[in-house]
Image: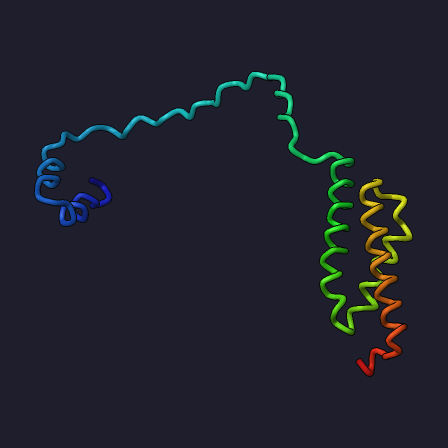
Amino acid sequence: DPFGLDAMLASELPQRARRAVRAAPVTSAPARRIPRRPPPRIPHVQPPPPPTSCWSAREVGVMRRFALLQCLDSARGYHRIAWARTGVELLVEHVWQHRSRLLAAQQSAIEEAMAWVRKCRAERKGAGVSARDA
C-alpha cells in the first residue's frame, strides 16, 4: 500500500472486513475498462402524430358565441345596480348591433335582450326619476 490507505481504512472497517482485507492477496492494478460506444442509431421514420384533441376554428367560434350569450345573461343580473345599468344596456345594444354574426336562434335571444333593455329604459323614463334621485 504505497499511499497508506490500508491503515486508515482498517480503523474504519468492521472486524470481519478487516480480516478480509488482510487475507486478500495483493494483485496488480485493476484492468481499465474500455468505454463502450453507443450502438449506432438506426434511422427510422417518425410515426405520424396522434390525432389532435384541439378544437377547430368553427368549434371555437360556436363556443365564443355561446359564451357571449352567457355573459349577456349574467350581466342582466347586475342591471339592478344603479351604476351598472348603463354598462349592461350598452353591452346588450352593442351585441344587438352585431347580431348578424350570430346564428338564428342566438339572434332571437339577442332580440329578446334588446326588447328587455328598451322596456327598462321606458320604465325609467316614465317614472321621471333620475339615477341620482333613485
